[in-house]
Image (cartoon, rainbow, N blue to C red; front, side, top):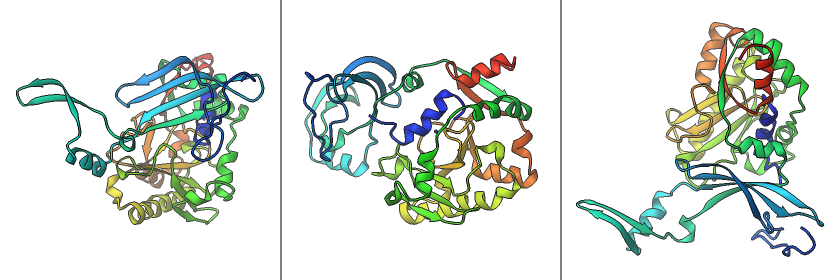
Length: 329
């Protein structure tokens, strides 16, 4: 869900952008009874990996319908530890093979049971060239976008692209994900829907991640916000925090509540994450605290229309080329 060709894909990402030949392997069934999402997977390339985040991004081929093969992007990430399960494991004296022992320090190899060895796996199939490029390691560059740059470069670029946000409207209209809604304020002007982000497995609050999606349409990003939107923003801040406290027992001062600029899709939404969680996109050049946004608009209704906003663009993003062509980068 964005400001370049890859931005559109982030929106598609949240909707699980989707998943041969006749002599290939037979379709395997998942536990849910459907087709296996990666039939006959063959690795083409490692797009990117992060030892710190315990995440790897893969590009491969899978057996599609008929004789053709399909490209797939697979994102694998280790699930966060759950304190109670780990405590139970260690309390049962599990087998541990010593790797290094020096005075009070010991390094051991321990093979956890399946329930503690989960790997969250996101599959994008069929994957387009844009998906593959999106997850490929790229150099990034900072953009200093003035208000006039937004009007002359960024906004025309956004309007020239076909960034579909139908999946957002499906949520607002209860055509999809209605069972995942944590809280709803149905007011068409100042209401929102709060639901878990797909990056959160909902098994522990340490990496809590929810999204508040505005009921009001037509607000693309920070740039569109004025003092007229303060009731909406205050509702999201207060009611969203209260809903999370009631459901997940996290206080408002244990949450990071922010908007992205550029956003991952062009419909106003606010991120709620656990304060101790290093969620993607919380860097200073992208995240704007909702409380700061509210204060800025209280002081100046045109604050985000006129101020310079800094953000990063990847080397392959079309918006970066627009800035370069305009002599602004």
